[in-house]
Length: 221
Length: 201
Image (cartoon, rainbow over all chains, first blue to last red; front, top):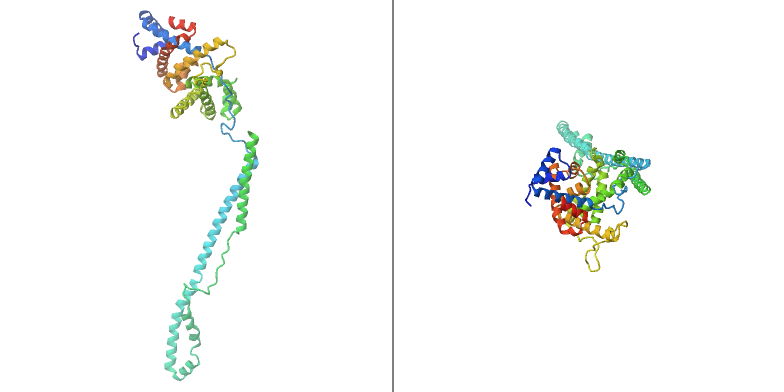
């Protein structure tokens, strides 16, 4: 039997299936009468087709119906679920807000604490030399003009303002070391108890959501 | 069965409607999978996977031949199964005799409506045809299964296999000729009517 090309085979196969128009069918039929190999190929194609069509139809050995679990469908959730969802989200947001607020206020308090003692110290430090100089000039002038009284004054303690202010300038504490500085009490804007309460609300809501989901699943399947 | 209405309900997520469709088509889907895969257990897996995939993607069905769309999903599932088999080949699942030989007429093939002689004949023929189908390349097997065993027309086969119409015709013609060559070795198993048809054309 001679070998036919793909186009011929397609043509013969379509002829066997009755898929050709009348003109193409007539052409094939004329080739069949002229060439016995064409008839043989047609017989082979018909044979294969009839054997395949004669196969018994096999029934499914079981049902292939789907369950909700198979397709990953989620059960409808009760209304309370959305309430728990909202409350857990709200509690979380509030918790974050309280943390942020506390962090902000504590950093502000520490900044204030750091800057508050520095201002009087610097004020004292600038005032002290200015006050010390007039005091010194005043003392020397008094010594020069009234030597008698000057000795009496120096014996009696000198200028009371100088005596009172000079030690201040000398005793001005350095800004770094402040042992007697009053400690700033760090107080949170939102009490910790509130934060714990919010955490509890959030956890309870999550638990409620979980319980409702499990309940709905069990009821559904 | 109001198929369009059921499809629409299934597209809205109604599983019960989809299951009605499953019950209607499951024999056909299983039969096609069995012919393509040549193994009952694999065919069951492929059919189940195909139905799951169909439900998940049923919104993608936009009219046209539902059977062709269904067959496309089944052939895809069969190709997946064949790829899995290629990656990890397994031993045949057909039952064996005590002598560890493949059983010719396993119980699962039994049809209570046939006499033992008819049953035996049918089983042997089915085995022979399946053997020849298994010898074909997968893409030829799919086309010949859909066109000749399932009786689908060329355009539906082209839709189901996503290949051009010309390719379907070519594959079908070549698959038929290869099957003819293979079945020549089993001529004595063929019913007399078929032998006569083959000889006379």
